[in-house]
Length: 362
Picture 1: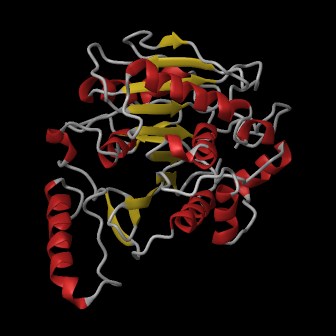
Picture 2: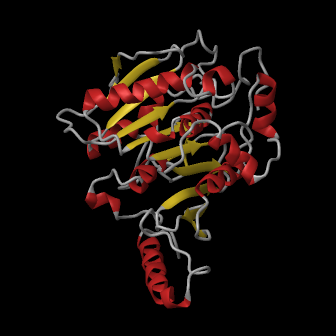
């Protein structure tokens, strides 16, 4: 891990030097007002995108450009193939020398303030400009961007249907530079209700809350895996799911999900065995998604594609094939009445057969 620098965030927090893709610049600059955080609005929309299409907000990590990360993580290609717009807020060096989103500063992480308010304004503008479906807006990010995605989930939950946090930290984990250093490697212990209270106090929102998809490598030495566990504690407390977790190990990862009483999957956790700090990508095979690079880690898992499938924004022919259990398939019979056991068994067998067909389970 890099030694601390004099910048506003530890040097090396999601330090990704991926270059822009071979296809050249694909993002265009958009206007945003108000913009108290001084961020740049970049975006991509496929030609002929119809009204009512989804919108995905993608937040880069430190030292990255918005374009390099959105391209390398596979979001721009997914948008072209499946028909949705991509909004890519970009940090300015004048805000943070390492171009990290300031996920830990109170002036940037409170509703109506700083970078959080700028991103929210961009989302509203993009929905209006593209005629996007306001009920299908999603946000994801890596590292500092992942932590900032969590900030938006807490401060502007009404804007998002789903949130993907990759190698990030829970909302409220830090409020100063010193606390940010400490949280990355030795997160302060809190109860689930204490973590949940930080989210509930961030806005007047009473629900429904966005679903949360958490991704972390168990070999991450930059943001330790304890952060993923704290994120689970935070968001399961907010959602209060009625169902016990369902766990499935496949493809070098442990997968857990929590389901609400209405059957919706509200929190999921993907822990990638041996993976360090970065976004999981899959560069080979028919389900390839993304390109390997610094902090874009080819572990044969296309996290962007799987998030998009879970969110229901992939084309029908791809949504049901070659994936881990998703929103409509997660089940657990442990806490259900005996009269439902037969249905659960059928669903479990379906999941197992799908995993075997995809080569994810022997």
